[in-house]
Length: 176
Image (cartoon, rainbow, N blue to C red; front, top):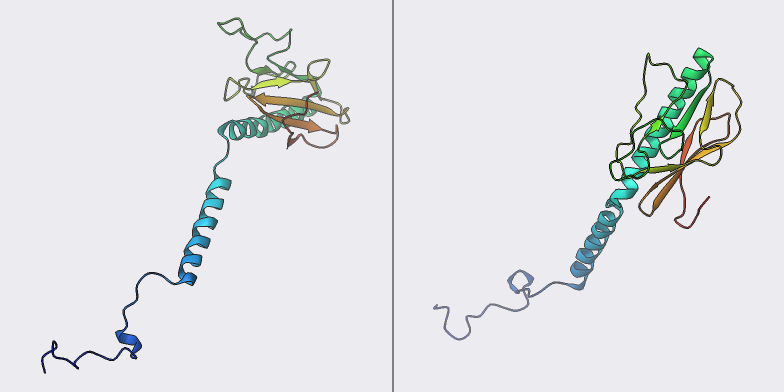
């Protein structure tokens, strides 16, 4: 029988023969949920580059401070950490006449010199008076902290005097 003849149409009752058009509501909701979760993860994965740079600098400085503290205790000599913004910093001035860059460890032996430059020259450090940190050789020191800044971001590196230096993010409105 020819397919164009009347009565040759297939039954509409058979589910395998029905033609689907569009998507079901469940399929649309599932796709929207997947897109929303992916967008949320992407937003969390993308961090402000200044915050990332500052956090890396803070972790690095905390490690350097701990190494200098250990060297001071082993050698039995007083060691300080002086930021580049301190008036008695022996470093180079930048060409535009701005503040000194980097930091210095007076009292630390030159057998194993520690780095004295920031990884990013835009980073600045602020230490409360006297403007430097005492790293040893005493085992017990007063609470000390350094405030690192880069653009509108800031991080505090602090020690209670007994424990190691810890890195903590501060709100943008906090100032010391």
